[in-house]
Length: 327
Image (cartoon, rainbow, N blue to C red; front, side):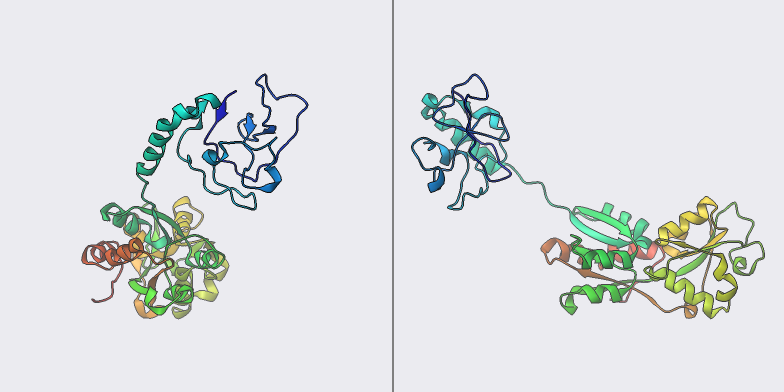
């Protein structure tokens, strides 16, 4: 009769009775079937429910650890292929050295470093990708609108660091004020593709402009800045019927690239790489203070924040059109 040591049950085991074994192997006195490997299940020797001579197994402690409530804890051989531990009960003593070696290998197996999970505003797409190449740590970056990330994090999204295009979102999520940091000031521009006949400096007043793309002001800070600039220039009422709203500032740029709009008001950090743009004067819209927050304090999160605010990190942000705070 073969015994499989090392499987990992995912639910409390239940002893099932059979009039005959599920295969040709004689299973008595063990009468439970493992729901995972189709072989017999080793009952919980610690539980009075299964503590009868008929169901007790002398090697149950070697398979996994159980408590008095018959709930499974961490198995001893979580990282070992259980097939290497098949042996007959009469050969159990001979397997002692093999089990010891397996335990030693499991303890010495190096763990893969966890990536720092970063939620970042879409305007950081190019800059943060460049920073990730230079940074020594491992980053898992998700891009999107700051407002959507704010809602997701409030609902339990598992991010370690949040880089928002609006520092107010970061402040609302911070467990303490010291967790928030200002990393950049954003700027907006009128952008058109290279193939467009429009001049970005005059595109907003051109009769040829049929559609203007901006980010959705409801949850995108750059969309609110674009709306404020249009109001400041006295163009909002005339252009409101022509507005095409992007989910985030990166999608706004894509709308113009695809021809869904003739021009767009986008982040300078995205506009520099292609097309033609005209920068909107800073006094025409509220300051785009971009702030980050450490959501789960750790050495890795603090190290990433320190690099972002260091000389090399600031240099990359400036290269992609951001203004960086002094210091």
